[in-house]
Length: 356
Length: 83
Picture: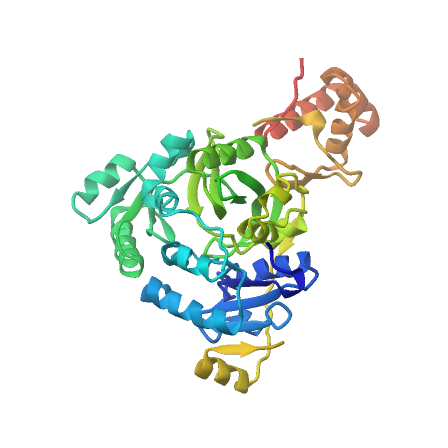
Protein backbone atom coordinates (compact mmCIF):
# COMPACT_ATOMS: atom_id res chain seq x y z
CA UNK A 1 0.00 0.00 0.00
CA UNK A 2 1.33 3.45 -0.85
CA UNK A 3 1.70 5.79 2.08
CA UNK A 4 -1.02 8.28 2.93
CA UNK A 5 -0.32 11.43 0.83
CA UNK A 6 -0.54 13.59 3.93
CA UNK A 7 2.01 11.47 5.72
CA UNK A 8 4.32 10.70 2.85
CA UNK A 9 8.05 11.33 3.24
CA UNK A 10 10.55 11.75 0.44
CA UNK A 11 14.25 12.14 1.12
CA UNK A 12 16.61 13.57 -1.48
CA UNK A 13 20.36 14.00 -1.46
CA UNK A 14 22.60 16.48 -3.27
CA UNK A 15 21.80 19.84 -1.68
CA UNK A 16 24.85 21.90 -2.55
CA UNK A 17 24.11 24.85 -4.77
CA UNK A 18 27.41 26.15 -6.07
CA UNK A 19 28.16 27.09 -9.69
CA UNK A 20 27.92 23.35 -10.38
CA UNK A 21 24.72 22.75 -8.42
CA UNK A 22 23.47 19.36 -7.28
CA UNK A 23 19.94 18.30 -8.32
CA UNK A 24 18.44 17.82 -4.83
CA UNK A 25 16.68 21.20 -4.52
CA UNK A 26 14.92 21.09 -7.93
CA UNK A 27 14.01 17.42 -7.40
CA UNK A 28 12.23 18.30 -4.15
CA UNK A 29 10.70 21.42 -5.69
CA UNK A 30 9.14 19.26 -8.42
CA UNK A 31 7.81 16.75 -5.89
CA UNK A 32 6.42 19.38 -3.52
CA UNK A 33 4.57 21.09 -6.37
CA UNK A 34 3.12 17.79 -7.62
CA UNK A 35 1.92 16.85 -4.14
CA UNK A 36 0.67 20.37 -3.40
CA UNK A 37 3.14 20.58 -0.53
CA UNK A 38 1.66 17.59 1.28
CA UNK A 39 4.86 15.60 1.01
CA UNK A 40 7.14 15.61 4.02
CA UNK A 41 10.45 16.73 2.50
CA UNK A 42 13.66 15.37 3.98
CA UNK A 43 16.94 16.88 2.85
CA UNK A 44 20.16 14.90 3.13
CA UNK A 45 23.35 16.92 2.77
CA UNK A 46 27.07 16.42 3.32
CA UNK A 47 28.30 19.84 4.32
CA UNK A 48 26.56 22.08 6.84
CA UNK A 49 26.78 24.91 4.30
CA UNK A 50 24.92 23.03 1.56
CA UNK A 51 22.34 25.66 0.60
CA UNK A 52 19.46 23.18 0.34
CA UNK A 53 19.72 22.36 4.04
CA UNK A 54 18.21 25.78 4.78
CA UNK A 55 15.42 25.69 2.19
CA UNK A 56 12.51 25.58 4.64
CA UNK A 57 9.99 25.84 1.80
CA UNK A 58 11.25 22.53 0.39
CA UNK A 59 12.47 20.55 3.39
CA UNK A 60 10.71 19.86 6.69
CA UNK A 61 13.68 17.99 8.13
CA UNK A 62 17.35 17.99 7.11
CA UNK A 63 20.17 15.68 8.09
CA UNK A 64 23.87 15.37 7.38
CA UNK A 65 25.15 12.14 5.80
CA UNK A 66 28.62 10.59 5.93
CA UNK A 67 30.57 11.14 2.69
CA UNK A 68 30.22 8.28 0.16
CA UNK A 69 33.93 7.45 0.57
CA UNK A 70 33.13 6.20 4.10
CA UNK A 71 31.30 3.25 2.59
CA UNK A 72 27.93 1.53 2.46
CA UNK A 73 27.86 0.32 6.08
CA UNK A 74 28.43 3.82 7.38
CA UNK A 75 25.59 5.08 5.18
CA UNK A 76 23.36 2.23 6.41
CA UNK A 77 23.98 3.15 10.06
CA UNK A 78 23.14 6.77 9.37
CA UNK A 79 19.95 5.95 7.44
CA UNK A 80 18.84 3.66 10.28
CA UNK A 81 19.16 6.54 12.71
CA UNK A 82 17.49 9.08 10.41
CA UNK A 83 14.65 6.68 9.62
CA UNK A 84 14.00 6.13 13.33
CA UNK A 85 13.68 9.91 13.80
CA UNK A 86 11.86 10.75 10.55
CA UNK A 87 10.52 7.72 8.64
CA UNK A 88 11.42 7.82 4.95
CA UNK A 89 9.09 6.33 2.31
CA UNK A 90 11.13 7.16 -0.78
CA UNK A 91 14.80 8.01 -1.11
CA UNK A 92 16.05 9.66 -4.31
CA UNK A 93 19.84 9.89 -4.56
CA UNK A 94 21.06 12.65 -6.90
CA UNK A 95 24.85 12.32 -6.85
CA UNK A 96 26.87 9.86 -8.96
CA UNK A 97 29.14 8.83 -6.08
CA UNK A 98 26.18 7.71 -3.91
CA UNK A 99 24.65 5.17 -6.25
CA UNK A 100 27.08 2.30 -5.67
CA UNK A 101 26.69 2.42 -1.86
CA UNK A 102 22.90 2.56 -2.19
CA UNK A 103 22.83 -0.43 -4.51
CA UNK A 104 24.82 -2.31 -1.85
CA UNK A 105 22.30 -1.56 0.90
CA UNK A 106 19.15 -1.39 -1.24
CA UNK A 107 17.59 -4.59 0.11
CA UNK A 108 18.34 -3.69 3.72
CA UNK A 109 16.82 -0.21 3.49
CA UNK A 110 13.82 -1.61 1.64
CA UNK A 111 13.16 -3.80 4.68
CA UNK A 112 12.95 -0.57 6.69
CA UNK A 113 10.24 0.68 4.33
CA UNK A 114 12.58 2.99 2.37
CA UNK A 115 11.80 2.62 -1.34
CA UNK A 116 14.29 3.49 -4.07
CA UNK A 117 14.42 3.33 -7.84
CA UNK A 118 18.04 2.87 -8.80
CA UNK A 119 19.97 0.84 -11.40
CA UNK A 120 21.69 -2.48 -10.72
CA UNK A 121 25.46 -2.78 -10.34
CA UNK A 122 25.66 -4.31 -13.81
CA UNK A 123 23.70 -1.44 -15.38
CA UNK A 124 25.88 1.08 -13.59
CA UNK A 125 29.07 -0.60 -14.78
CA UNK A 126 27.88 -0.94 -18.38
CA UNK A 127 27.18 2.80 -18.49
CA UNK A 128 30.44 3.93 -16.89
CA UNK A 129 32.71 6.03 -19.11
CA UNK A 130 35.30 3.27 -19.72
CA UNK A 131 32.56 0.83 -20.81
CA UNK A 132 30.69 3.14 -23.18
CA UNK A 133 32.12 1.48 -26.33
CA UNK A 134 30.63 -1.85 -25.17
CA UNK A 135 27.31 -0.14 -24.44
CA UNK A 136 27.43 1.47 -27.88
CA UNK A 137 27.74 -1.93 -29.57
CA UNK A 138 24.97 -3.41 -27.47
CA UNK A 139 22.55 -0.52 -28.02
CA UNK A 140 23.58 0.35 -31.59
CA UNK A 141 24.55 3.85 -30.50
CA UNK A 142 27.58 5.77 -31.78
CA UNK A 143 30.27 6.40 -29.17
CA UNK A 144 33.11 8.85 -29.83
CA UNK A 145 36.30 6.87 -30.62
CA UNK A 146 38.86 6.88 -27.85
CA UNK A 147 41.03 4.92 -25.48
CA UNK A 148 40.84 4.11 -21.80
CA UNK A 149 44.26 4.33 -20.17
CA UNK A 150 45.36 3.00 -16.80
CA UNK A 151 48.83 4.57 -16.98
CA UNK A 152 50.91 6.81 -19.24
CA UNK A 153 52.89 3.97 -20.88
CA UNK A 154 53.12 4.47 -24.69
CA UNK A 155 51.04 7.61 -24.29
CA UNK A 156 52.46 9.35 -27.38
CA UNK A 157 51.52 6.40 -29.57
CA UNK A 158 47.98 6.24 -28.17
CA UNK A 159 47.52 9.99 -28.59
CA UNK A 160 48.87 9.83 -32.14
CA UNK A 161 46.32 7.14 -33.02
CA UNK A 162 43.47 9.37 -31.86
CA UNK A 163 44.86 12.68 -33.14
CA UNK A 164 44.37 16.28 -32.03
CA UNK A 165 42.30 18.00 -30.82
CA UNK A 166 41.65 15.44 -28.14
CA UNK A 167 39.54 15.33 -24.96
CA UNK A 168 41.05 14.13 -21.69
CA UNK A 169 38.31 12.95 -19.35
CA UNK A 170 38.31 11.97 -15.68
CA UNK A 171 36.68 8.67 -14.77
CA UNK A 172 33.86 10.44 -12.87
CA UNK A 173 33.94 14.16 -13.66
CA UNK A 174 35.67 16.85 -15.74
CA UNK A 175 36.96 16.92 -19.28
CA UNK A 176 39.53 19.08 -21.01
CA UNK A 177 40.17 19.80 -24.69
CA UNK A 178 43.84 19.52 -25.57
CA UNK A 179 45.93 20.45 -28.60
CA UNK A 180 49.31 18.89 -27.76
CA UNK A 181 50.96 16.10 -25.79
CA UNK A 182 52.13 18.47 -23.01
CA UNK A 183 48.53 19.42 -22.26
CA UNK A 184 47.49 15.77 -22.36
CA UNK A 185 50.14 14.94 -19.74
CA UNK A 186 49.14 17.93 -17.63
CA UNK A 187 45.45 17.03 -17.53
CA UNK A 188 46.09 13.32 -16.97
CA UNK A 189 48.05 14.34 -13.90
CA UNK A 190 45.34 16.72 -12.64
CA UNK A 191 42.44 14.33 -13.28
CA UNK A 192 44.10 11.19 -11.94
CA UNK A 193 45.02 13.00 -8.74
CA UNK A 194 41.43 14.18 -8.33
CA UNK A 195 39.39 11.21 -9.51
CA UNK A 196 41.90 8.37 -9.88
CA UNK A 197 42.49 6.14 -12.89
CA UNK A 198 41.51 5.24 -15.56
CA UNK A 199 41.54 8.30 -17.78
CA UNK A 200 39.60 8.45 -21.03
CA UNK A 201 41.23 9.94 -24.13
CA UNK A 202 38.68 10.78 -26.78
CA UNK A 203 38.71 12.31 -30.23
CA UNK A 204 37.29 15.83 -30.15
CA UNK A 205 34.26 16.15 -32.38
CA UNK A 206 32.77 19.56 -32.96
CA UNK A 207 29.03 19.70 -32.60
CA UNK A 208 26.00 20.65 -30.57
CA UNK A 209 25.27 19.08 -27.20
CA UNK A 210 21.86 17.89 -26.11
CA UNK A 211 20.84 16.53 -22.73
CA UNK A 212 18.13 14.03 -21.98
CA UNK A 213 16.73 13.18 -18.59
CA UNK A 214 14.68 10.00 -18.38
CA UNK A 215 13.28 7.44 -15.97
CA UNK A 216 13.06 3.67 -16.38
CA UNK A 217 10.75 1.53 -14.26
CA UNK A 218 11.84 -1.51 -12.25
CA UNK A 219 11.74 -3.60 -15.43
CA UNK A 220 13.90 -1.13 -17.31
CA UNK A 221 11.17 0.23 -19.51
CA UNK A 222 11.38 3.88 -20.50
CA UNK A 223 8.57 5.66 -18.64
CA UNK A 224 9.35 9.31 -19.19
CA UNK A 225 11.86 11.64 -20.82
CA UNK A 226 12.62 15.26 -21.64
CA UNK A 227 15.30 16.58 -23.98
CA UNK A 228 16.87 20.01 -23.80
CA UNK A 229 19.60 22.06 -25.41
CA UNK A 230 21.76 24.32 -23.28
CA UNK A 231 21.48 27.99 -24.24
CA UNK A 232 24.04 29.35 -21.78
CA UNK A 233 26.84 27.38 -20.16
CA UNK A 234 29.22 28.22 -17.33
CA UNK A 235 32.98 27.89 -17.75
CA UNK A 236 32.54 24.35 -16.35
CA UNK A 237 30.11 23.57 -19.17
CA UNK A 238 27.10 23.48 -16.84
CA UNK A 239 23.80 24.63 -18.30
CA UNK A 240 22.75 28.02 -16.92
CA UNK A 241 19.88 28.31 -19.36
CA UNK A 242 18.25 25.75 -21.62
CA UNK A 243 15.23 25.00 -23.78
CA UNK A 244 13.20 21.83 -24.27
CA UNK A 245 13.46 20.39 -27.78
CA UNK A 246 12.24 17.26 -29.54
CA UNK A 247 14.19 15.40 -32.19
CA UNK A 248 12.93 11.98 -33.37
CA UNK A 249 16.51 10.72 -33.79
CA UNK A 250 17.27 11.49 -30.13
CA UNK A 251 14.02 9.80 -29.08
CA UNK A 252 15.07 6.67 -30.98
CA UNK A 253 18.53 6.72 -29.41
CA UNK A 254 16.99 6.90 -25.93
CA UNK A 255 14.61 4.01 -26.72
CA UNK A 256 17.56 1.90 -27.92
CA UNK A 257 19.47 2.76 -24.76
CA UNK A 258 16.66 1.51 -22.51
CA UNK A 259 16.08 -1.62 -24.60
CA UNK A 260 19.76 -2.53 -24.27
CA UNK A 261 20.36 -1.62 -20.63
CA UNK A 262 16.94 -2.13 -18.99
CA UNK A 263 17.93 0.85 -16.89
CA UNK A 264 15.96 1.30 -13.71
CA UNK A 265 15.65 4.76 -12.19
CA UNK A 266 16.48 8.31 -13.24
CA UNK A 267 19.40 9.27 -15.46
CA UNK A 268 20.84 11.93 -17.71
CA UNK A 269 22.23 11.19 -21.16
CA UNK A 270 24.66 13.65 -22.72
CA UNK A 271 24.45 13.52 -26.49
CA UNK A 272 26.50 15.24 -29.18
CA UNK A 273 25.31 15.96 -32.71
CA UNK A 274 28.41 16.19 -34.91
CA UNK A 275 28.56 19.39 -36.94
CA UNK A 276 29.93 17.72 -40.09
CA UNK A 277 28.30 14.28 -40.19
CA UNK A 278 25.10 15.22 -38.27
CA UNK A 279 25.62 11.91 -36.45
CA UNK A 280 24.43 11.59 -32.84
CA UNK A 281 26.98 10.31 -30.30
CA UNK A 282 26.34 9.30 -26.70
CA UNK A 283 28.97 11.13 -24.64
CA UNK A 284 28.07 10.22 -21.11
CA UNK A 285 25.49 8.53 -18.89
CA UNK A 286 24.88 10.09 -15.47
CA UNK A 287 23.03 7.71 -13.11
CA UNK A 288 20.80 10.37 -11.56
CA UNK A 289 18.68 13.39 -12.39
CA UNK A 290 20.43 16.50 -13.72
CA UNK A 291 20.39 19.85 -11.91
CA UNK A 292 18.04 21.21 -14.62
CA UNK A 293 15.36 18.62 -13.71
CA UNK A 294 12.77 21.26 -12.77
CA UNK A 295 12.50 21.96 -16.51
CA UNK A 296 10.83 18.54 -16.86
CA UNK A 297 8.10 19.56 -14.46
CA UNK A 298 7.76 22.94 -16.20
CA UNK A 299 7.35 21.16 -19.56
CA UNK A 300 4.52 19.02 -18.20
CA UNK A 301 6.48 15.86 -17.41
CA UNK A 302 7.24 15.69 -13.69
CA UNK A 303 9.92 12.99 -13.64
CA UNK A 304 10.85 13.28 -9.91
CA UNK A 305 7.19 12.71 -9.01
CA UNK A 306 7.03 9.82 -11.46
CA UNK A 307 10.10 8.35 -9.73
CA UNK A 308 8.33 8.50 -6.35
CA UNK A 309 5.33 6.67 -7.79
CA UNK A 310 7.45 4.00 -9.49
CA UNK A 311 9.57 3.49 -6.37
CA UNK A 312 6.38 2.92 -4.37
CA UNK A 313 5.22 0.23 -6.82
CA UNK A 314 2.53 2.36 -8.44
CA UNK A 315 3.75 1.67 -11.98
CA UNK A 316 0.38 0.41 -13.18
CA UNK A 317 -1.18 3.73 -12.14
CA UNK A 318 1.30 5.88 -14.04
CA UNK A 319 1.08 6.90 -17.68
CA UNK A 320 4.11 7.15 -19.96
CA UNK A 321 5.49 10.70 -19.80
CA UNK A 322 7.13 11.25 -23.16
CA UNK A 323 4.96 14.05 -24.57
CA UNK A 324 6.21 17.29 -23.16
CA UNK A 325 5.98 20.90 -24.20
CA UNK A 326 8.72 21.96 -26.59
CA UNK A 327 10.19 25.47 -26.35
CA UNK A 328 10.04 25.80 -22.56
CA UNK A 329 13.08 27.73 -21.33
CA UNK A 330 14.82 27.87 -17.97
CA UNK A 331 17.25 30.48 -16.76
CA UNK A 332 19.14 29.94 -13.52
CA UNK A 333 20.20 32.59 -11.04
CA UNK A 334 22.22 32.81 -7.87
CA UNK A 335 20.53 33.85 -4.65
CA UNK A 336 21.61 34.51 -1.08
CA UNK A 337 19.68 32.73 1.65
CA UNK A 338 20.19 34.05 5.16
CA UNK A 339 20.58 31.70 8.09
CA UNK A 340 21.19 32.20 11.78
CA UNK A 341 24.37 31.05 13.47
CA UNK A 342 22.25 28.88 15.78
CA UNK A 343 21.03 26.85 12.78
CA UNK A 344 24.56 26.27 11.56
CA UNK A 345 25.61 25.33 15.09
CA UNK A 346 22.76 22.83 15.52
CA UNK A 347 23.47 21.21 12.18
CA UNK A 348 27.18 20.94 12.92
CA UNK A 349 26.70 19.61 16.45
CA UNK A 350 23.62 17.43 16.06
CA UNK A 351 23.72 16.69 12.33
CA UNK A 352 20.05 17.52 11.90
CA UNK A 353 17.53 20.36 11.85
CA UNK A 354 13.74 20.25 11.98
CA UNK A 355 11.62 23.03 10.56
CA UNK A 356 8.13 21.63 10.92
CA UNK B 1 17.90 15.50 -39.79
CA UNK B 2 17.06 18.24 -42.29
CA UNK B 3 13.75 20.03 -41.92
CA UNK B 4 11.59 21.46 -44.64
CA UNK B 5 11.82 25.23 -44.78
CA UNK B 6 8.15 25.65 -45.53
CA UNK B 7 7.29 23.89 -42.24
CA UNK B 8 9.18 26.47 -40.21
CA UNK B 9 7.17 28.09 -37.40
CA UNK B 10 7.78 31.79 -37.70
CA UNK B 11 5.98 34.60 -35.89
CA UNK B 12 4.94 37.89 -37.48
CA UNK B 13 8.03 39.52 -35.95
CA UNK B 14 10.22 37.06 -37.86
CA UNK B 15 11.24 35.20 -34.68
CA UNK B 16 11.94 31.51 -35.33
CA UNK B 17 12.34 28.66 -32.83
CA UNK B 18 13.62 25.38 -34.23
CA UNK B 19 12.00 22.69 -32.03
CA UNK B 20 14.50 19.98 -33.02
CA UNK B 21 17.67 21.93 -32.20
CA UNK B 22 16.51 24.60 -29.78
CA UNK B 23 18.03 27.31 -31.94
CA UNK B 24 16.32 30.65 -32.20
CA UNK B 25 16.94 33.33 -34.78
CA UNK B 26 15.20 36.28 -36.34
CA UNK B 27 14.40 36.76 -40.02
CA UNK B 28 14.59 40.27 -41.43
CA UNK B 29 11.66 41.70 -43.38
CA UNK B 30 12.74 40.37 -46.77
CA UNK B 31 13.62 36.91 -45.38
CA UNK B 32 10.26 36.75 -43.63
CA UNK B 33 8.58 37.75 -46.88
CA UNK B 34 10.42 34.95 -48.73
CA UNK B 35 9.40 32.32 -46.16
CA UNK B 36 5.79 33.48 -46.08
CA UNK B 37 5.64 33.40 -49.89
CA UNK B 38 7.21 29.94 -50.04
CA UNK B 39 4.62 28.77 -47.51
CA UNK B 40 1.86 29.74 -49.98
CA UNK B 41 3.29 27.13 -52.37
CA UNK B 42 5.13 29.58 -54.66
CA UNK B 43 8.15 28.39 -56.68
CA UNK B 44 11.54 30.10 -56.70
CA UNK B 45 10.81 32.32 -59.76
CA UNK B 46 7.47 33.38 -58.36
CA UNK B 47 9.06 34.24 -55.01
CA UNK B 48 11.71 36.33 -56.77
CA UNK B 49 9.03 38.18 -58.77
CA UNK B 50 6.99 38.97 -55.66
CA UNK B 51 10.12 39.98 -53.72
CA UNK B 52 11.18 42.33 -56.55
CA UNK B 53 7.74 43.86 -56.58
CA UNK B 54 7.47 44.21 -52.79
CA UNK B 55 10.92 45.72 -52.22
CA UNK B 56 11.25 47.56 -55.50
CA UNK B 57 14.39 45.79 -56.77
CA UNK B 58 15.12 44.20 -60.14
CA UNK B 59 14.08 40.60 -60.62
CA UNK B 60 17.58 39.17 -61.18
CA UNK B 61 18.88 40.70 -57.92
CA UNK B 62 15.80 39.42 -56.14
CA UNK B 63 16.39 35.91 -57.51
CA UNK B 64 20.02 35.99 -56.32
CA UNK B 65 18.86 37.14 -52.89
CA UNK B 66 16.33 34.30 -52.67
CA UNK B 67 19.01 31.78 -53.69
CA UNK B 68 21.45 33.18 -51.13
CA UNK B 69 18.78 33.02 -48.42
CA UNK B 70 17.89 29.41 -49.31
CA UNK B 71 21.57 28.47 -49.25
CA UNK B 72 21.98 30.03 -45.80
CA UNK B 73 18.90 28.24 -44.49
CA UNK B 74 20.14 24.94 -45.96
CA UNK B 75 23.35 25.32 -43.97
CA UNK B 76 21.20 25.68 -40.88
CA UNK B 77 19.40 22.44 -41.73
CA UNK B 78 16.30 23.89 -43.41
CA UNK B 79 15.97 22.54 -46.93
CA UNK B 80 13.72 23.75 -49.73
CA UNK B 81 13.11 21.88 -52.93
CA UNK B 82 13.60 24.68 -55.47
CA UNK B 83 12.74 22.52 -58.49
